Image: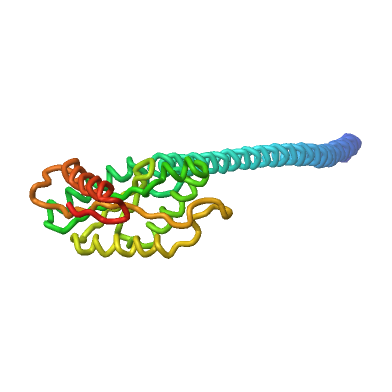
Length: 263
């Protein structure tokens, strides 16, 4: 009987314990739910921040790429401009070099170019024992042409003479205008006989030429006097070689012109 009362006394105490356990379990469930919700909210928030960060980074990367493209285009433009400037400078240098070595009226090499080429040809011929000839020629009575018609007509005569001289010369020859009415031809690998034949061809070309008058005004015919020499052992310098040829030209002029003198 006393044991039964003891069990009875214990039964009321176990019911509140069960109720307390249920409340505890509810709080646990609620805590789990809240944790899940908070996690979801936090994940969403973090996901949005990550998306915003990624979008910002993408915009910055795009802006940097655009800036790099712009800088690259500017650099290309600068390089193109530099290349164009260098091309213009090189072209101008070629023009200056051409003008420095070209006779402005006739387009033939001028005295400077002639002197340089004569020195080179002289040295090569002396070194290798190759023949070399030189022709100097003056247009006969050009002063009278200038006085009778005009200097413009005289210039026309010089231009036509240069054209004929260039036409009878070989590619290996160097025709030049030394100034005034004086022309010259350096004949490489050519002896005196070859120089004589060139002078004959030029005399025939002058005799057949019909374009001496400029617009119908000017002389009907033009002649020239020439001096011809071949490089010899007595020529120790280009100046001596040239002086011998100039002497031959002087003799041809004073013999009446329209002829070739040999030196």
